[in-house]
Image (cartoon, rainbow, N blue to C red; front, side, top):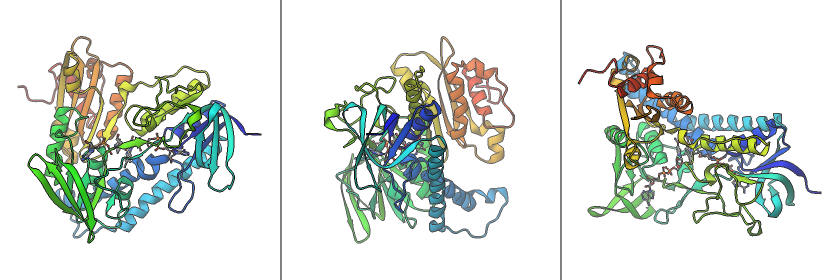
Length: 476
Ligand code: FAD
Ligand code: NAD
């Protein structure tokens, strides 16, 4: 007889594994199936995020930041390092160790929570049955559940003009495993991945050229932030070419030849490696048998309601495979919500307070509405800006680039959006999340005591600036 569960999760990325753990915590008999295998063919739960996304990219960003700091930043502190070298193989081995340890950690969490883990492919069949094709078993098996949670994640979008060859033309996963620093590195797409990977390899010494099809830089960010970061990235040597659409790429003689079109016609560029980073698409091919009748949209995104319920009763979908930003923490929160709902509780995700972070240097972080969004919807607002150059702590650290901007409703003073560029903004933004989750006004932030000297004071000062009363800003 088929094994019966209260909940089965397909996919053990940050959406799926968190959903499985919360289901188990709530007393549900839970299973999770995931198909990710490490380079040594071992199960590696954690999905894109842990294996080829958030974690390895941040491990390498950290290494590259240390290198760049020792090379360029440390002398101003009076610390003289006569020579500095990179050993890419050690850097990569450290990154792999971080990934392996965290992935094993998820295995341990599954075990300690009594979750049955299947390493293999899962496919949703009719009536909440799931076909499991385990890698270490010849026969497929069918299990069934009262509830199925689909968390299959996403994969990089292919570009016909730049077919991957696993050596010279790679996707983001390939770019996290280069064995040497490319001399000249091309990147198609100046989105989040393009900017993070571009920064990473630029810091290690590559000449980096980003070819971006849109004519506006970073349109998802606040315009002021986008302008400021564009300036800073250009000063760092990132060659960002907007309005540049790649027509054809050819890998020959150990180089990639790129033809692209911009406002002046067809251009030619030659690079040593090319990264394709033009977005991601949901992994919904072959996730579900046709007769099960799961509704997908034309992009393969699983159709869900506000509670992540699909059109099939008892079948939920979460993470990158549903609407919304493709972010690990957004998927995890959906996983918790669905587990709570299955266990009979009420739960929801507040999509208005999702933190967005780009882990470049300086870091870019924001929550809520941009100025252009507020203007386009006719919302009256007041803005307060505070530059890190006026922060004592930023000065002491020598990291004065950037600013904090608070946007508050002109009538109610409720915070509608906060935008930051600068050092440690990936950490600073969480206090904004807490404030916005509690419905804070800019006055609430003004009335809060912030420790001195900290970078967080810039948030306080930006809130004060909403009412024209920032202490450490020269009077206009
Ligand atoms: P995934 O993490 O993709 O996991 C889905 C899992 O399901 C995978 O293991 C997959 O193999 C498995 N699966 C799919 N289909 C099946 C099936 N039929 N049977 C069994 N298993 C299946 N986000 C952030 O928030 N912060 C970051 O800093 C960040 N950095 C990133 C850097 C890079 C280079 C990339 C590529 C992405 C980054 N992201 C980041 C995005 C983040 O990785 C994703 O938003 C997140 O992983 C999505 O989680 P998920 O659980 O929905 O899917
Ligand atoms: P993206 O959507 O952020 O950027 C893709 C870029 O490629 C866009 O600017 C787009 O205009 C451009 N583009 C598309 N087709 C093109 C073409 N033919 N030629 C030139 N440019 C082209 O996607 P991404 O950078 O691939 O990232 C995918 C997802 O992963 C994002 O949704 C992001 O949220 C997530 N991610 C998040 C983080 C983070 O939170 N720090 C880090 C990495 C990835």
